[in-house]
Image (cartoon, rainbow, N blue to C red):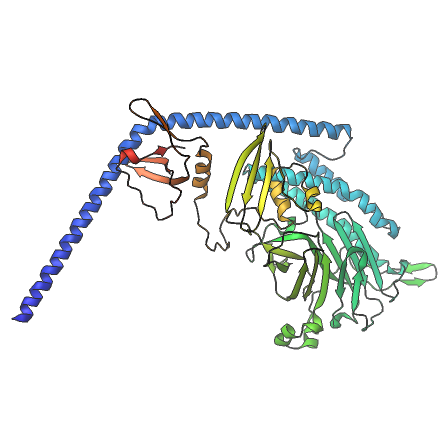
Length: 558
């Protein structure tokens, strides 16, 4: 009897709970229906105003774009006129045919190799023109990047990469020719061969192991502030080592497209660290000199390291990782001083096959920020650089803009690590808060924004934002819809909100602090694009809004 009564009580309780849930569900559906009806009615009433505002906004935007184009065309005409007065041989970056012809002709222009002492000097006279064209192509590329015209950006990238490849091929041709004519150069005190050259943006050191002396352990290119230790497995080998530190325009172009891996940005330059095979020594027979040639195209014959024989000398893989003294080399090179380096910065090499930056085999990294000297131990003879997080300054903490003159404004951006103060002008900007004289001189001229941000990343100021979130470690970032965010920013007004009462009185309220955006609201068969705007500075992602109260609803259309 008692069990039957308890069972009946449980049934009644469950029935009561079901009725309450059903009531709550119906009330929720009814509330949602009221909301939809209210918003649909409200938006239909406001649609004419939306369309009027949109037309006015598009008209203003078109007028501003036209004025900007006239300004940029006027600046370009001045540049073209100055090039004409200077009788410049450089082509216009806007005429692809001329750029292609210039690269083709320069590629065919020979580097005199008979007089080896003049080879590098002659190359130095050829490089400035090519470097200037690389700079112009980079500037033009950045303009297309700002306009989100990726088709034109990629087209110019092909020309720039090709020109950089020709520049590097000419440098490598001289380097290989030096190796093939070692007998014509004066030897160093150790009887080995050592050569240095400091071309603009290219510091070059060449060494050849001629004596096969196992006691020779350290090679110092004092003139260019670079050095390396000779690993034991190479002490008796017929090898040469080339160190080429490249910086300036186009120095990082080959590393822009990576295939996953660490998302990092090189700082101060990239060291091309090569292990190459030496040709056999020239032999003199009567009045003839027989000079062996390793490659017909003048490129290096690079040696993989560690080789199979090196592995046998060192032992198994575990010993290879622990006994770095046997086959690792200690390398030092110097970038510009006082770069903006984060504590997490390290040295990595670029794997050309995987197209990824990696720290595999690199140990004991040291960096002196004041002098710019970098020291590390590595088992990789590959392109190497000091790198740090590509998006170090993100998420941006704060930004502000204020006018500073006719068509000028001061933009202050506060990132996670550093603050940037820019003077923004007509299509160009420059940095105002550089405290170092060297960097201040680098950024004293106004240049296009995208180009400026790229140059800043080369000294460790990483203010370039990601285009996508693939492989990006977002941490505690708050993701936002990119197009929605852009529309919101374009629609934010600087003037205060004015409310008109029924009696005609105007009340000025505080400026809007937040924009809560709804990019895809569908009411009935219609899709509306609009935003709720609020002056509440404490709005969070969890904020809820009741939309069935017309007196509290403010809607702005973009």
